[in-house]
Length: 577
Figure 1: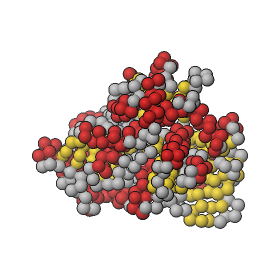
Figure 2: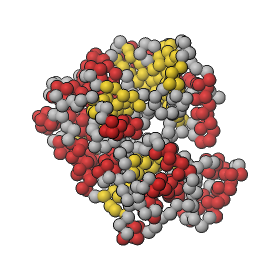
Figure 3: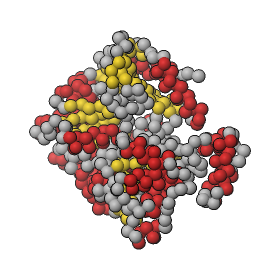
């Protein structure tokens, strides 16, 4: 144990600022130098979106002290912007300590003279985005670790446009947080904050408006009225926030046969039935798929704990088997439906835009072209999609019609500025009804897209390296990739490399360099021949390095084989000493 770690550990054990339960937790670690080092070797980083980390005592953990520290920095920035009277909306999910962290954040803001509007119980993240705009707040906070494992929690910050913080606010808030010591934050008793009108509670009125906005996105409610009574949907909220709003949206639209997986219906931050509450993880679907088999459900849906991501399985009527859809697939189905039907109905706005991240499917390119819609690509993270909506509003350059990212997130409207699984559920259920009226399933609809645009397939692999040594290894991997650029990947020639950290695109054949227009980020993107691509970036929320890739084939089998080769080479790039 180095000297800095030892001093931090002893300070937390001795200073009266820290409560006895925290000290007892730390005393129990005596002699476990590895664990003490991991908890104290750094300050839990307030990144460009906020905090995310393992719950527990220590500077490198999520606890009431690190939450207060982050909130004090946010408060200082809000006051510097003259936004104290506008207030801050606060929501939280079902994770352990989420209610406590959200309350501590509110009281810290209140002690700084800033009004807060805190939801009276857990709510989906997209509803927080909606509430920030509806209540005309300067900022918003949601306590969630999204789809991370059960030991995590997080703290995401939104700005007044309803999107997660982007430049310059993210960097400015980070700078303010960095100035705050662990014992510096202000706080005050809740009863005093209520009396002074600083602490306010959000109730069902915002729920009603949020649900109304989601329902307004329905394109063909008449088809739902025809088909819904004969459809069966199995849904699981994976112990999270989606149960009430998802069931309400479906019920009010007319989907009467919605069966919720009973063991996963109740919010529970220990996630007793899943190790990893993520719709992207096949293991998370075990109970829902078993129920779907029993009920012969047409559609199986799962939302992550804060209900901003949606996973989908559909029953193949030819085989009776359930087929999974990636986020790219479900996103393209929704995108095609919106673009096609709005074009047919004459409701497409002028200068329409489809927005996606750079690691999302290339199928969006021919799709956007087919409907005369501009495709705009942004960095990974839905906040950059939300930022584009703000830019469109300010400049009048485009009208947003749909946005998506590969990680099971999309937004079909502008009432919120973050991905919304409740809206995605509604759109996919309507899609299923629409195609059912034509004697088709979502599987058939996806095959039509492949035939129309090409057999695009995408993959993601992530390598986990925990702790200080892991962070250093991830850094070495990225450095090695920059210093020793690959010439071929998956049998495809590297045509160009985009280094978003340096802001330079380098042509592999000529060495010609051109400037990139997107913000600086620790991301490497490889343009490959044969319509393929790949991308490497360290995760901003977990101790992982992620490799994304995509290919275009002549059939599903051909694209699957091409993807397999490409992913094997990417995994090898991460195997350095």
